[in-house]
Image (cartoon, rainbow over all chains, first blue to last red; front, side):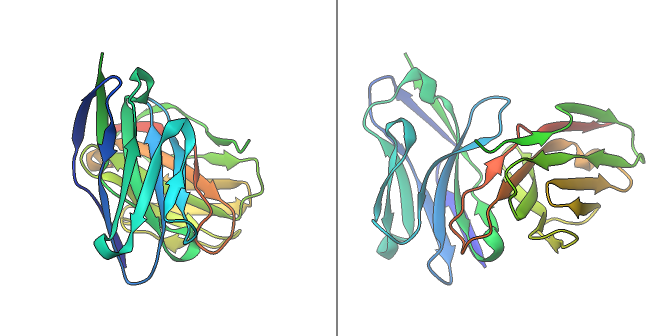
Length: 112
Length: 114
Protein backbone atom coordinates (compact mmCIF):
# COMPACT_ATOMS: atom_id res chain seq x y z
CA UNK A 1 0.00 0.00 0.00
CA UNK A 2 1.14 3.52 -0.58
CA UNK A 3 0.12 6.95 0.58
CA UNK A 4 0.92 10.48 -0.44
CA UNK A 5 0.91 13.53 1.81
CA UNK A 6 0.95 17.07 0.49
CA UNK A 7 2.01 19.16 3.42
CA UNK A 8 0.33 22.44 2.44
CA UNK A 9 -3.22 22.85 1.24
CA UNK A 10 -2.55 26.45 0.12
CA UNK A 11 0.65 28.23 -0.87
CA UNK A 12 0.83 31.89 -1.74
CA UNK A 13 3.84 33.47 -3.48
CA UNK A 14 4.56 36.75 -5.19
CA UNK A 15 5.13 36.77 -8.92
CA UNK A 16 8.83 36.30 -9.67
CA UNK A 17 9.65 34.56 -6.38
CA UNK A 18 10.44 30.83 -5.95
CA UNK A 19 7.78 28.18 -5.59
CA UNK A 20 8.06 25.18 -3.26
CA UNK A 21 5.25 22.62 -3.05
CA UNK A 22 5.94 19.78 -0.66
CA UNK A 23 5.10 16.10 -1.08
CA UNK A 24 5.98 13.08 1.03
CA UNK A 25 5.17 9.50 0.13
CA UNK A 26 4.99 6.22 1.91
CA UNK A 27 5.50 2.99 0.00
CA UNK A 28 6.77 -0.50 0.64
CA UNK A 29 8.81 -0.35 -2.59
CA UNK A 30 10.22 2.31 -4.86
CA UNK A 31 7.23 3.87 -6.53
CA UNK A 32 6.99 6.00 -9.62
CA UNK A 33 6.20 9.55 -8.58
CA UNK A 34 4.33 12.25 -10.46
CA UNK A 35 3.28 15.87 -10.23
CA UNK A 36 0.14 17.00 -12.02
CA UNK A 37 -1.38 20.45 -12.39
CA UNK A 38 -5.06 21.29 -12.64
CA UNK A 39 -6.26 24.64 -13.92
CA UNK A 40 -9.86 25.67 -13.15
CA UNK A 41 -12.49 23.53 -14.86
CA UNK A 42 -9.86 21.33 -16.47
CA UNK A 43 -8.57 17.83 -16.01
CA UNK A 44 -5.11 17.11 -14.67
CA UNK A 45 -2.04 17.62 -16.81
CA UNK A 46 1.28 15.89 -16.19
CA UNK A 47 4.09 18.22 -15.08
CA UNK A 48 6.81 15.66 -14.51
CA UNK A 49 7.50 12.09 -13.39
CA UNK A 50 10.22 10.21 -11.53
CA UNK A 51 10.90 6.62 -12.55
CA UNK A 52 14.16 5.63 -10.79
CA UNK A 53 16.51 7.32 -13.22
CA UNK A 54 17.90 10.76 -12.31
CA UNK A 55 16.78 12.00 -8.90
CA UNK A 56 16.34 15.56 -10.17
CA UNK A 57 13.50 15.59 -12.67
CA UNK A 58 12.75 18.47 -14.99
CA UNK A 59 9.24 19.05 -16.20
CA UNK A 60 7.25 21.47 -18.26
CA UNK A 61 6.92 25.22 -17.67
CA UNK A 62 10.18 25.44 -15.68
CA UNK A 63 9.13 23.11 -12.87
CA UNK A 64 11.41 20.50 -11.40
CA UNK A 65 11.30 18.02 -8.53
CA UNK A 66 13.92 16.17 -6.55
CA UNK A 67 13.46 12.61 -5.31
CA UNK A 68 15.01 12.11 -1.86
CA UNK A 69 14.68 8.53 -0.78
CA UNK A 70 16.09 9.15 2.71
CA UNK A 71 13.40 11.76 3.33
CA UNK A 72 10.69 10.00 1.28
CA UNK A 73 10.04 13.33 -0.37
CA UNK A 74 9.38 14.58 -3.87
CA UNK A 75 9.04 18.36 -3.58
CA UNK A 76 8.13 20.49 -6.58
CA UNK A 77 10.02 23.73 -7.21
CA UNK A 78 10.20 26.57 -9.68
CA UNK A 79 12.73 29.40 -9.49
CA UNK A 80 10.35 32.19 -10.46
CA UNK A 81 6.55 32.08 -10.25
CA UNK A 82 4.41 33.36 -13.08
CA UNK A 83 0.78 34.38 -12.87
CA UNK A 84 -0.15 31.48 -15.14
CA UNK A 85 1.18 29.04 -12.52
CA UNK A 86 -1.83 29.71 -10.29
CA UNK A 87 -3.59 26.34 -10.16
CA UNK A 88 -3.98 23.26 -8.01
CA UNK A 89 -1.10 20.79 -7.91
CA UNK A 90 -1.32 17.10 -7.12
CA UNK A 91 1.45 14.74 -6.17
CA UNK A 92 0.92 11.07 -7.02
CA UNK A 93 2.61 7.71 -6.50
CA UNK A 94 1.96 4.62 -8.57
CA UNK A 95 2.27 0.92 -7.88
CA UNK A 96 0.98 -2.06 -9.80
CA UNK A 97 -1.44 -1.74 -12.72
CA UNK A 98 -0.61 1.94 -13.01
CA UNK A 99 -2.81 2.60 -9.99
CA UNK A 100 -1.91 6.12 -8.86
CA UNK A 101 -2.56 7.33 -5.34
CA UNK A 102 -2.84 11.10 -5.08
CA UNK A 103 -2.32 13.59 -2.31
CA UNK A 104 -5.04 16.03 -1.32
CA UNK A 105 -3.67 18.80 -3.49
CA UNK A 106 -2.01 22.19 -3.00
CA UNK A 107 -3.59 25.36 -4.34
CA UNK A 108 -0.98 27.80 -5.51
CA UNK A 109 -1.85 31.48 -5.47
CA UNK A 110 0.43 33.90 -7.29
CA UNK A 111 0.21 37.50 -6.18
CA UNK A 112 1.06 40.18 -8.74
CA UNK B 1 -1.94 13.92 -28.48
CA UNK B 2 -4.03 11.63 -26.33
CA UNK B 3 -7.59 12.71 -26.00
CA UNK B 4 -9.84 11.54 -23.21
CA UNK B 5 -13.39 12.69 -23.67
CA UNK B 6 -16.07 12.68 -21.01
CA UNK B 7 -19.49 12.93 -22.55
CA UNK B 8 -21.00 15.43 -20.11
CA UNK B 9 -19.44 18.45 -18.47
CA UNK B 10 -22.31 18.97 -16.03
CA UNK B 11 -25.06 16.61 -14.91
CA UNK B 12 -27.93 17.10 -12.49
CA UNK B 13 -29.75 13.99 -11.32
CA UNK B 14 -32.31 13.13 -8.69
CA UNK B 15 -31.78 10.82 -5.75
CA UNK B 16 -32.43 7.22 -6.71
CA UNK B 17 -31.83 7.67 -10.43
CA UNK B 18 -29.48 5.40 -12.32
CA UNK B 19 -26.65 7.50 -13.73
CA UNK B 20 -24.18 6.70 -16.49
CA UNK B 21 -20.94 8.63 -16.93
CA UNK B 22 -19.19 7.90 -20.20
CA UNK B 23 -15.52 8.18 -21.08
CA UNK B 24 -13.78 7.54 -24.39
CA UNK B 25 -10.06 7.60 -25.19
CA UNK B 26 -8.56 7.66 -28.66
CA UNK B 27 -5.03 6.32 -28.12
CA UNK B 28 -5.57 2.58 -27.74
CA UNK B 29 -4.59 2.67 -24.06
CA UNK B 30 -5.03 -0.53 -22.11
CA UNK B 31 -5.70 1.05 -18.73
CA UNK B 32 -8.64 3.24 -17.82
CA UNK B 33 -9.61 4.76 -14.49
CA UNK B 34 -12.40 6.59 -12.73
CA UNK B 35 -11.55 9.02 -9.93
CA UNK B 36 -13.73 11.34 -7.92
CA UNK B 37 -12.41 14.67 -6.77
CA UNK B 38 -13.68 16.42 -3.66
CA UNK B 39 -12.31 19.56 -1.98
CA UNK B 40 -9.79 18.69 0.71
CA UNK B 41 -9.81 15.01 -0.24
CA UNK B 42 -7.94 15.14 -3.53
CA UNK B 43 -8.54 12.40 -6.07
CA UNK B 44 -9.76 9.03 -4.94
CA UNK B 45 -9.82 5.98 -7.19
CA UNK B 46 -13.22 4.39 -7.68
CA UNK B 47 -12.55 1.65 -10.25
CA UNK B 48 -10.02 0.85 -12.90
CA UNK B 49 -9.70 -1.50 -15.82
CA UNK B 50 -6.59 -2.91 -17.47
CA UNK B 51 -8.32 -4.74 -20.29
CA UNK B 52 -11.67 -5.11 -21.99
CA UNK B 53 -14.24 -6.69 -19.66
CA UNK B 54 -11.74 -6.54 -16.79
CA UNK B 55 -12.29 -4.33 -13.76
CA UNK B 56 -10.71 -3.84 -10.39
CA UNK B 57 -12.03 -2.01 -7.35
CA UNK B 58 -10.24 1.09 -6.30
CA UNK B 59 -10.31 2.71 -2.89
CA UNK B 60 -13.97 3.80 -2.83
CA UNK B 61 -16.05 1.45 -5.03
CA UNK B 62 -19.19 1.36 -2.87
CA UNK B 63 -22.25 2.60 -4.71
CA UNK B 64 -20.57 2.43 -8.11
CA UNK B 65 -20.06 -0.10 -10.87
CA UNK B 66 -18.26 0.07 -14.22
CA UNK B 67 -18.46 -1.37 -17.67
CA UNK B 68 -15.76 -1.82 -20.30
CA UNK B 69 -17.16 -3.54 -23.35
CA UNK B 70 -14.74 -1.89 -25.78
CA UNK B 71 -11.14 -0.91 -25.27
CA UNK B 72 -11.73 2.79 -25.87
CA UNK B 73 -14.80 3.21 -23.64
CA UNK B 74 -15.12 3.01 -19.86
CA UNK B 75 -18.44 3.76 -18.20
CA UNK B 76 -19.10 4.58 -14.58
CA UNK B 77 -22.54 3.64 -13.27
CA UNK B 78 -24.28 4.92 -10.18
CA UNK B 79 -26.98 2.32 -9.62
CA UNK B 80 -29.06 4.54 -7.35
CA UNK B 81 -27.65 8.03 -7.05
CA UNK B 82 -27.39 9.59 -3.61
CA UNK B 83 -26.59 13.13 -2.52
CA UNK B 84 -23.20 12.04 -1.16
CA UNK B 85 -22.21 11.15 -4.71
CA UNK B 86 -22.33 14.81 -5.71
CA UNK B 87 -18.77 15.36 -6.90
CA UNK B 88 -16.41 15.95 -9.79
CA UNK B 89 -15.68 12.72 -11.66
CA UNK B 90 -12.48 12.37 -13.65
CA UNK B 91 -11.71 9.68 -16.18
CA UNK B 92 -8.13 8.82 -17.13
CA UNK B 93 -6.25 6.39 -19.34
CA UNK B 94 -2.68 5.12 -19.60
CA UNK B 95 -0.54 2.67 -21.49
CA UNK B 96 0.15 -0.75 -20.04
CA UNK B 97 3.73 -0.43 -18.75
CA UNK B 98 5.49 -1.19 -15.49
CA UNK B 99 4.14 1.58 -13.31
CA UNK B 100 5.60 4.69 -14.88
CA UNK B 101 3.19 5.52 -17.65
CA UNK B 102 1.46 8.82 -16.92
CA UNK B 103 -2.28 9.22 -16.70
CA UNK B 104 -4.13 11.24 -19.33
CA UNK B 105 -7.21 12.89 -17.92
CA UNK B 106 -10.48 14.08 -19.33
CA UNK B 107 -11.88 17.46 -18.29
CA UNK B 108 -14.25 15.96 -15.77
CA UNK B 109 -17.98 15.63 -15.20
CA UNK B 110 -19.48 17.66 -12.39
CA UNK B 111 -22.39 15.64 -11.04
CA UNK B 112 -24.99 17.13 -8.72
CA UNK B 113 -27.49 14.79 -7.09
CA UNK B 114 -30.52 16.54 -5.61
